[in-house]
Length: 407
Ligand SMILES: [Zn+2]
Image 1 (cartoon, rainbow, N blue to C red):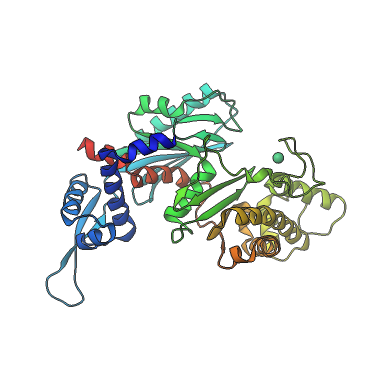
Image 2: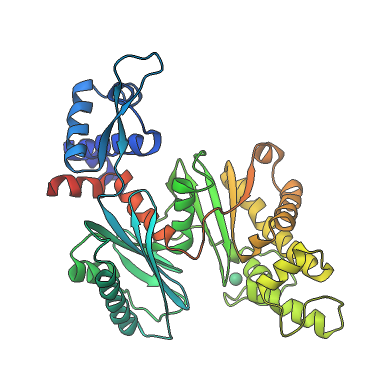
C-alpha cells in the first residue's frame, strides 16, 4: 500500500487532481476570494490559477462576483463557490428507517423523505433501496437538475474504498457490493460509509469542528460509534473501521456484552440500557416523575433538565462512563475537540459536566488544557453524514476531476 502511494506521487495526473482539489476547497471554505489570494495561499503560479479557475467556471462549480473595494474605485472580481448547479442524493440506512435527502453542494437540504425499514434480507433491502431511490428521483425531478452522486451510510463495518458492506447490525450481509450495484443502476458515482464516521466528517466540514484540524465524535444511540478526524481527514485503518469505543471496558463488574467481554461502555450507556436501569429503579420504588411505562430516553433527558433526581442521576452516570472512554481517546489522540452526539445530548449541561469530570481526573492535564467539549450541532438522524462523503470526494479531487472531464 505504501509503495503504491509512492508511485502515485510522481504521477502528473494525481498532481493535477491535488491542485484542482486544493483550489476548489479554498474557494468553498474561504470565498469570496480573489485569484491573487488563491495564488498566494496555494503557492501555485498565477497562470495555473487562471487555468484552474477557468475550468471550474466552465464546469459551473464556481462563479465570479464583483466585490466593492473599501477604498472605492473599480470593483474587484472575486470568486465564490456555486452550489446550486449540481445535486447529490444522500441516504442514511438506520436500523429501522431509510432517510433519503437531496442536497445542493452547499450542504443545503432540498428535499427529505423518511421510509420504514423492516427486517429484510440483503437482497430485499437492495431491491427496496433501489425502488425508493427511483421513486425519490421521480418525485423530485424538478429539483434534480444535475445529479453528481449518490451516497449511503449505515452502521457497521463498511469498506468505503471497495464499496462493500462487510457487516451491518440489522441486515445479514455477505460482502454486499452495494456501490457497484447502485452504480450500474443509476450511472453516477456512489459513495458508501459508516454512519458515525461520516457524521464526524460532516461536523468537520459543516458543523462544530470546522475550525480545528483534529477532533473525535462519539455518538450514543443503539450502539456507540466514533469517528476520528486527524488533519481534517477521517482516520481509516486497513478494514475501514477504527475506534470501537463501545467495547472499552468501563466497569469490571458490569454485565456481559454481546462481544463476550464484561462491562463494556456500550452496555452502560446506550439508550436502551439507560431506559432499562430507569425502569428497574422505578419498580424498586425510586421516587421520580418517570413512570415504568414512560421512561424513554427523551423523557429521561427532558425530566433531567427539569431537575428530576433519578433522571439527572441516570444521565450523569452515563456521562461519567462515557467520560472514562473519552479520556482514553484523549490520551491516545490528543484531539482539539470532542463532539458528543445522540439523544443523551438533549441534556447537554448534565452530560457535558459529567464527561468533563471524568476527563479532568483521567486524561493528561496537558492534553485537556485547551480541549473543547461540545454537543453535535448537526441532526444525527439526517443524511448529512452521507452528504459529507460527496463533499470529501470533491475536496480530495476524485469527484471533481470526473466533473471536469465530463465537460
Ligand atoms: Zn463489548
